[in-house]
Image (cartoon, each protein chain N blue to C red):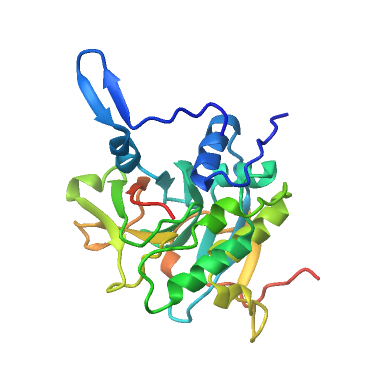
Length: 155
Length: 134
């Protein structure tokens, strides 16, 4: 089994270089379908295979809260460039995740906060985790895809 | 980090010297190769955490190691479906004066078929991104 070096304090880019060289990509069958605008079709989040390998390996990716902090900085009207990029590199990396935990992390990182903060509020869910084979198999009417009103949510 | 060589200049025995800042600044900091047809998928990549299928011809790319600002450059690759490529195709990055904004971690790729002037999925797309990392 490949052992992750001690990466706290190492630039995240360098960690990803190590991962690319040492880890096999993992193609996840999970997809996250979400709606962030009533005027637009449903979006589908696809995990990156090399990123998923990092998540399952552990000791490489920073805590997701780091990305939230950087997003807060970026949202400021006077933002020019990141001055707290060190958070990505100096914060203790997260431990190995299961594939399901990795998908949850990815939702918190890459889906709009407005979606995951209130995904189950309103008349129907704004976000669903599913498997690739549950999606339509052709791209027909892609720009009209919505989350089904008849969705049965697992408890 | 183990195995590190610190150098400001690389010198070839006959061809001259090259400052390592050329290597650092000139290297792509992220790249990916995607297929938008069927269920959108990533063939291979570096420094990407996910893509989002935003509709026909549209893909948002999100990176792991954030860029210092949103002035990075994404060079777009594309090839349209067999049978439509002869009519021409085009791709670019959607910007804030369009329907998407560029952030330090995400940008949206947009592909069109110039023959039909409509959005179109490409079987071979992606971007190579140059810029300064945070």
